[in-house]
Length: 282
Length: 259
Image (cartoon, rainbow over all chains, first blue to last red; front, top):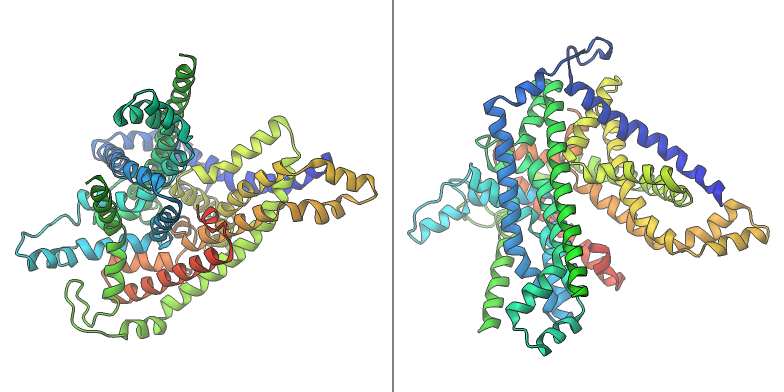
């Protein structure tokens, strides 16, 4: 059966060309300057990284991080109870609830964001509704609040589903044992349900934070250029400005940010598991 | 009391999730261009939609690329998965890790990285580059869907077949492929939905001449709102719901497929 290995060779070549080489190119461009069309004439330079550290760009990076973190926290706060409610529902209701949670995700991402544009825009549905009831208008789009809302809307199911999956696998006997031994509901939640659900929470956080920190669609459409994120800067550099060097540095920084946050999350995941073992020993 | 609170909470969450979709659908039948006012029922936007060359062309590219990318990535991914399964040690880990890069990397980085490759190599951005990009991000999902099925495979059966005189390719076709079919199918479904839904990677690799539906929606939404997008969204949403119902009816494991 060893001979079957050769089946992986063509794909290895494909991956080298279309996955490895492009990333090397981005890395190369980030550390050079000169004509992008002439690889031989590129000169080493850290100028585009120096440019990233200018206050306007630093502010954009910090902004992306803050907005992504906020949207992740909101998704966690809103999504955890939903996951618990769905996991506790009886099987028939449960599969219906799951289906209703998934259907919006099947709608094209662009259209979902566009839908919020038509609700939140100054003359949009929400303001007409508020006017109708004699309430003051809301001027949140374009702006940060609208971007945050768009992120929460688009990524909430990514938080709910992994947490639900973990919660639904928790052995009911643990909960019975806890209540037999006199633990009240709050105690059961903090001592059993929450620690056991950490892996789901961790993957939920990763699945929300990652697309949120790198988006340019949500900020482009709902933020109206007022609150550019790191994704908008990258798009600008590659599509409109043609400054690949600066765009590449920004991409590398985005990747590093994501790698660091993923490392932190997997650390928490591991610590959570050790905790679990600790409990078992005690 | 607690039950009531749960119901209200879930009601609010579902209101939040569905309000934009309902607004889009309702306003796709609205007579005026205004987004806030209801001026009477019309099907004009739907009629205009099918006359709009930009949209019909985008629809054609979206579907063609999705089908081609699904077929190619399913075949290549399945073959690669079998190869990777029989590898050992460092090489296997290396390939699996590289295979995971497009899944874990943000789409925007994958997009710009491919764009720099294509342009540096002197390729014109267009249908071909977009197709390559789609095949690239679809294959990892196929491999990740097929590998678990290969792990469940009893390796002695294929060996027994070959001891009894089957050639490796015969054993592959008659024993391995039928056993891993569910993995191949769910991988293909994943690939298709990823491709049809993609915006970011297509945006960077399609160039100016070719666009898919997502790219059209993005450029239209940026320029200002057109009610034809509402009509388009309604149709796309309906298509998805119908597809979903069919899949759910056809297989009891529908839920598993969706998740």
